[in-house]
Every structure is written in C-alpha cells, then in structure tokens.
Length: 288
Image 1: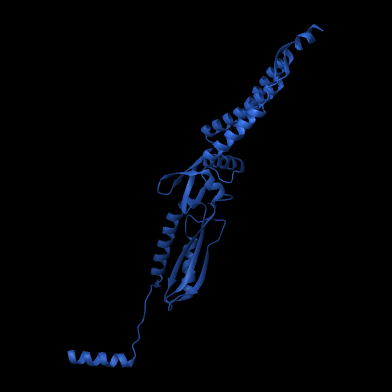
Image 2 (image 1 turned 45 degrees about the horizontal axis):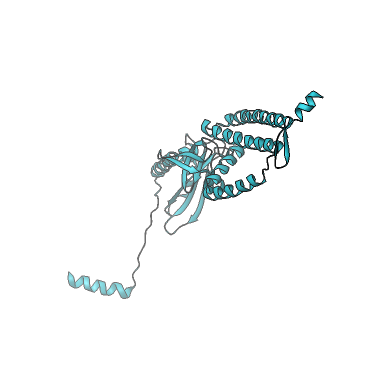
C-alpha cells in the first residue's frame, strides 16, 4: 500500500493531467531504454557498414543521425507519458521541417542517395564507371558525395544523386571483362584471306587479352576507299583500356605492313570529259 501511495502521489498537474511519481519513473525508464536502443543500433550499423569499406566519417554521420532520431522519439514518448501535450510542438516542428526541407533539398537528396548506394552496393570502391562521359575509378563513397579519380589523376567530387538518378556505366558491376574494338580498313586489291588471318593472329597474341573470350574479327562493310574490319579483343582490366588499345593499334599496323597489306586512306579519283580535256590540252600546247 505504501509503495502504491508513493507511486500515485501527484507532483503537479499539466493541462488537467496529474503528474505522479509513477509517471516520472516510467518516463525515466523510457529514456534509459531509448539510450540503450540507440547504442545497440549504432553498434549494429558499424558492424554492418565496416565490411563494405565505407569511410569512417560516413559511418559516424549515419550513427549520429540514427542516435538523434531514436533519442528524439524516446523523449517524445517520455514527455507524452508525463502528460505534456505534443500536438502544438509537432505542428510547429512540421512547419519548421518543411522550411528546412526546401532549403536543404539537394543536401537531403544526396544524403538519401548515399544511403541507397551503401545499401544496394551497385557501386563500390575501386569500381570503374563512366559518369557524364568521363571514365573514373571510385576511391571512396561518402554519405553525401563520392570521390573518384580520372585517368588523368584528377579527383572528382560527384554528388551521390547523380550516381543514383543518372545513367551510369559500371564496367565492373558483375565482372571486370571489357571489350576493346579496333577498326581498320585495307585497299580493295588486298588478299582478304591474308588480312583476316593476320588480324586474328595479332588479336590472339596480345599479352593482356582475357582468356575468357576469344578474339573476334569481322568484315564490317565495303567503304568508298577500303574494305573495313572490326577487331574485338576482351581484357580483364577496363582501367588500362587506352594503353591496351594503343598496343593493339601498333600491333595491327606492323603486322599488316610485314604482310605487304596497304591500310587504306580516303582518296578521290577525278575523271574529266573530253569537252573539258580538249580545251585544256590546247591551252597547254599554246603555252608550250
């Protein structure tokens, strides 16, 4: 009975609701539970994100936001238990949140995009991407931006919303195999069997080519001045594609040269009618 009387003892009244010792203790217990729930969630988030090579700064930001959100909910429940009317507070908070939302729209968009990237894992550190026409390698994925490096050793700060909302080529999403294509044209008088065999041999001899795909040589079309071929070779490292393509071009050049095959270049034959050539001939004779 004494314990019940102590718990039911009214300390004060808020908006007609009595605040007893029991409600205060209940609110305190709610706050303690909220604190431990926040700690547990933060530890779980750290364990989940560290194997994903997420930057420590990004993990800290995520855990802090989760902590503040959980504490806010816990305080709101505790105040409601005591008897505080939270309707007006939430209404004012909603108006404030709308204003902040408009002001920080891009920031919130990039933040949510960062969370999506971390969860989906469609883009990871060391992935090779093509973003807005530039080939880059991902260095670090942050909660708001992603740091990437170009082939010119320039570091780019890419907003995460671009990676989530735009069309991005990920050359290493499921595997790193990458197709290189070299186009070459030879003159019409060339021995086409010799050309095909030479191009196939050159493609097969490249030291960097992938063993998972065989090279492919196709005669693509008959041009104005050349018969055109498409030489395709697959490699395992798309980041080194420019160097490999240069080596492939050089190998094709020297192989065709050694085989006495002429690489075609644009040319134009002009034929003049007799009505034009005869006056020109007479003028030449008079000048002589």
